[in-house]
Length: 222
Length: 222
Image 1: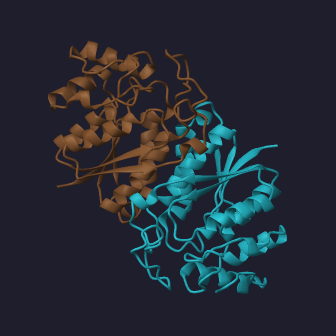
Image 2: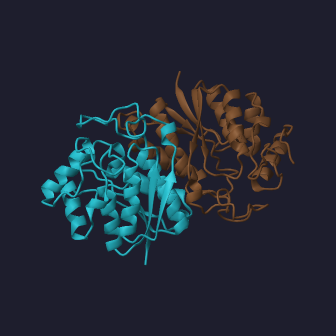
Image 3: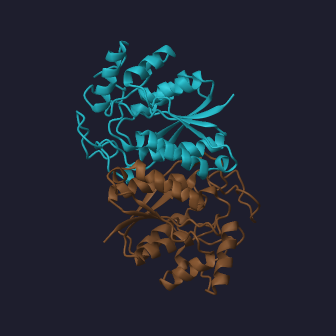
């Protein structure tokens, strides 16, 4: 049985990613990041999803991104916009996926994982540069050079099963695998109970996804 | 005046790197990582060095690497060896430079830096895979794809001025630039006052460097 590290944000995409990794027969270690995000309920959701899908372990890595600043998601002085604009949005956290993948790479070395699953998506990607396939390819190259495993000839695979799927496709896939999306939180400004605002970019994409997938939306809006 | 982010560990190499970046005319923002390392006095040394060399700002990023484990430097159950062996040593922190560079990349975006200075070294590198030039090249490619600046055609340069220098060369260069190495701490198990053990790998390389450079060693051994 092969081992994988799965990045879990508490949201819909990463939960689907874990369901896919489990379906593909991986023993999974999940990892979440406490980086001063507005939505603490995301972290609770990640714990629920990890347990519900039978992961071997779940780790929350403390990460002082607030000290760096520069994003509406970690700097509470910047407002979260209610609709998407052009270009890279203020909800972009500088180098976030690079940082998250790097820490996952460290964990993959320690638990001797052969793959890292990350739910990045180039279709509904909201304009983040670090969600594109060329970014993932560059990280794959780096992973082969950065680690013991890579040096010894077994580079860790960066698996992105959602890369080419629409939000509706993702929801259909997770639903087929029996995933309960009621466990997940996607809203950028969910309240402590995990109830969504229904208005931010992330809520908009999620709601649309359920509509297009013809799957009942289990999200609780406040 | 161009801006740079400089990774500062509190040790000899990164202090020299900062001295070089300052000499090359950069306005510098320094960044250190509190990752549960044994040697807290490293972090104090980084603050001293940043101030002494006139950096614009200094940030300490909290980083829960202890949660990941797998290294004698963060897992206190693993003993620090007193002499170097073959291969990758137990003091290797999984994916450390990948993680540190990623966070520095985030800061570089926020402070609008055109370069990141890191004191990696392929000569006296103690067998860490993430100190090699091919690793840095791969990270340079990644940086061009991962960030706003890269997407907009201004990739952030990863500067490694120490890559090809021996420890003695590094010490000679820093001494020319007026750097006081008494401010720095290299020992893997320095005490709270920053006094070195004189026996670990890092102490051995440092002491040898001063001898070969014919520069008086200001290190305080306990």
